[in-house]
Image (cartoon, rainbow, N blue to C red; front, side, top):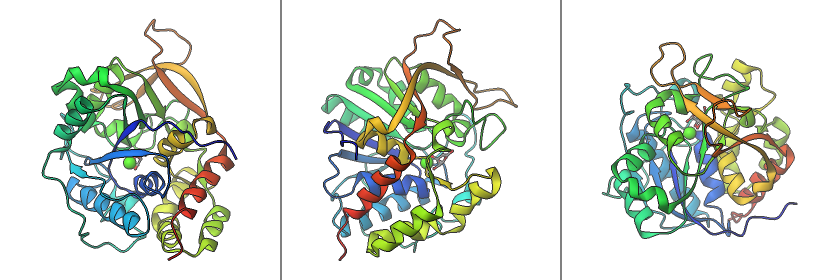
Length: 324
Ligand code: RIB
Ligand code: CA
């Protein structure tokens, strides 16, 4: 078992739940996770902002009810991308954005403060903040644009998005999070701060297979049942059927796995530019892998993952939730 990171930098998780966002949250909020989650901010993406914020509150409430982190404030952010109309992915995640678990209105409240204002406020209040976006980058880009001073307070942006060797999953040349708001993504990738990126190149290697789901089911706890419900839903079949993957890619969980155990991943230093306006290549991440552009190689691009180490980490997090 590789050692868990002992760093406790303050984290802001920006998400669009979505099952893989939800699993990432379940890992990050798990008992004694060592992670210092200061806020969950929500953006539109997999479904509408209204449903994504409901889903984020529902998952956070379930985690808290079963021994996970309590009182993490949740903020709703931008309802649509900077310039394009919102594109969603209900065909992947279900009409409520969270196929596989019972959907109900959680008691856990939504904060009145807008997510962008919360991100700016927390970055100004705290030091060495780590932003962890796993959806379209609209909230993050808006915060960076509205308050350029926070750039110096952000230690790292750890994001799920983009593609190089895996081409795309929403168009032949773009990954969904970057495609939905490429103008926001361009702002983030051009920002003068360290980025760590989990693109399809690595998330298509972090596959949860039926044998893994069976191992999770054997735990037979409330949280393992929540997880297996999602992993045995239509959501879990979508990528397998469309891309022929040998399992379900839990894209967003790669960010949390990295925060818990960085050595589970292998990285290459690159620089990334985003195509925002091309009708064909909208959302394409142009990854300078061979230092051709002269741009600063300020981005750690994940190129490989210890697949069993990733799964061990996921099941370890879920196992930390008590059986009753
Ligand atoms: O392309 C995969 C990404 O798009 C994941 O973050 C998924 O949740 C969706 O937001
Ligand atoms: Ca997501």
